[in-house]
Length: 322
Image 1 (cartoon, rainbow, N blue to C red):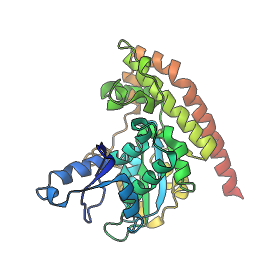
Image 2: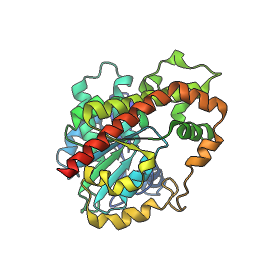
Image 3: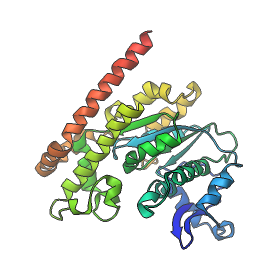
Image 4: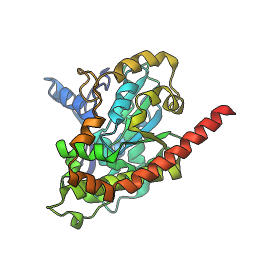
């Protein structure tokens, strides 16, 4: 499934999945596997984005039960994989077609907000279609920069619980230094999507570009919590938080715990491998340059996130005592 711009405007290119569940760590992994199927071309279908919204009105879809925002490299894939362990759930992790809709206003600056909202609801409905037949809840794990579209997402889905995950920033910076995400490379993603400008990039200071982008994302997470009640989750709380405060937030069932527990013991991005804690290793590997840039650009907003999370924890504890 793809969202693209053609001669006639926004288009959706569909992929037939049948009863295949979205179990891969990332949505695009499932799509890539399906597109090399020898009969893929026989089921290829294209429509306009407007047709997509019309079609979805008559399709059986699963209600959206949670949206996961994140800082990146902070445990969001683990949460998505734990949720996907239940056959009652559909989990779409960083689906590129949704990214296309969320950034459509950057491609077409005249796009009416009402139309983008329709496309957004239609795309979520398309991603959340029933396949096996018994699915009850649909969860979205977004790309990290999508927190900047939280106003649009809240308008589209006013009652859906939001989460924002984050992690000790030195560990995140080291992760990107070792294996940079595409969006941390200037020019690979429109800097406006990161709340940056094109002239913010200094070729001699790639770490600064990454740190500033991460700081903007964390600022978005703070807004998500303070304005829209997003639950803040520090990586250090995982996986236990999934069986506690997030279990209640996402209204999960006790019967789902065994599968979720088993999944929590695997490497989220490489499920064939066991989980291995790496926080200390990452901190030890941080160069002096990474530490300096982190302290200047990321530490202040990290402290604010921790303060806000502390207030949330106090409020949750008080509510349980009532």
